[in-house]
Image (cartoon, rainbow, N blue to C red; front, side, top):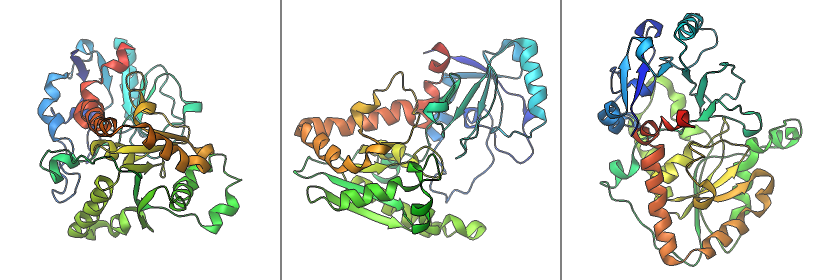
Amino acid sequence: MKKLNIYFNKKYLSDNKKCEGIFYPFIEPLASNPNDPDFNRFDEYIASGKDYFNVSDNMADSDLAIWPESWAPNNDNIKEFLEEVEKYQKPAVFFFYNDSTEKINVGKHFLFRPSLYRSSRVANEFAVPGVSEDFVKNYFNGNLPIKEKEAKPIVGYCGYATESLWFSKLKKIFTRSDGWLVRSRAIKNISKNSEIISNFIIRRSFWGGIYQKGPNTDYQEMKRVRREFVDNIVNSNYIICARGAGNFSYRFYETLSLGRIPVFINTDCVLPYEDYIKWREICVWVEAKDIKNISQKIIDFHNSLSATDFINLQKKCRSIWEEWLSSNGFFKNFHRHFDI
């Protein structure tokens, strides 16, 4: 395994801002609320990250110069940082954890972000996964809950979905309109098919409205809603995974972490490690323009699997999450972006 020397200089880190997760094994991150369900999502990487990276404040000795916080276009320190990068002729890396798909010009350097459009992506932009807690470890004592194959596929979804009249009237205006309505269209299509068992919990707001409470967040209620979400996934065979506000699906990675098979609705997306993971082999892959056929695609996929295949695919989904998409897996393989 290749170990990278990465540059970190605290002078570029804004006051009261978290450093990027890649530095967590080396620089203690700002404290977060231990009641937050995602509190320990970096724990394994924090324990192992020193096997993958060395951190130095000497750019001359580094393989990569990493901007220490999420990209912000109006940060005056970026100019100084890039001048230093140019002086030492080092490749720079920026992270942008945001729903935005705005065009960001980092020149010849590297940009990692969750929300990309394949049709406008450039060669030095890469996808990052949504990182959440390890559900198997935290909810099932580390034992992957395996489901046997049944005659009819059980398709789950727990979350926000709406197809309002307002959106329907305006959908022709938006060039990326599939992203606004795709969840509801998928749910409606699947619900009508008698050859599929629907397991849907429809929310009318993000996280059931809990995050909207701000500093008065009820963490016990948050845990209850999270448990409902987890149970919906493990009690299903397949999970609808479609974009939200950004052009990516957090649920996609959570589904894989629990060893369930994503029904991935592609809205011109870019997925992590596409040169290494054969994504179409582990998902029911549905193009957004073909959503009218989503039910048949699920049925055909389900019928193509033997009972053994079905069990093995659950294990494979979990393994891919562990090895490539968990915080530890992503950073363990981080060097591969630069090998290419």
